Length: 234
Image (cartoon, helix red, strand yellow):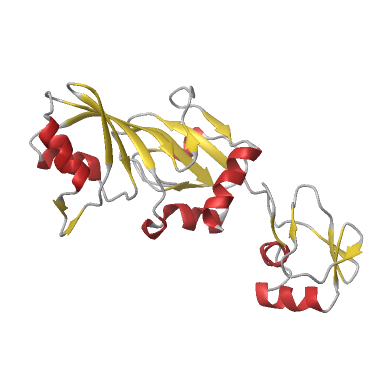
């Protein structure tokens, strides 16, 4: 899962609050791999390092997991939705996980899922401005002027969309990079310029790419991928 601050590990393991954890560290009551540490900036890898408080071993309260899923159409981005197929049903693991952000029912592509609450919040909250890249196909050829309007930002849902990056692929297809994610935003933007989305697929979320993952399939993020996400939210 990568390195985290020692006091955060103590808190997530249920030993104490982060503030109390800092006090324990400064007091010399915490050992990492058999050595007392009093530095508040100390980071550990819970999968590799051994931590003790007053001589007693501290274990993580649960295994943190980080997953990439290629969401197929007709699945709701939710943990529970009576009468609907939900994305967590596609991932058969014992840990309880939550989707990061949303893709509407008709949209497909990259969805991240995790049980790491802090990472989930930092990646989901709109104030953190993480990029999301989409492959968009529309019903009719779309003009350069319409793409420029969407790129510069449009009045939508009582506010104005942020500037986006758009690259045309063909007369009816383009790639869009957003740093926000309002409800059905791309579909609403395309409708605003007089067209309709017929296919919407997310190819990238922050530093994580969909790659060749097949629809409905999932994989654990690599160590390098999780570390790249941690660097974004520190």
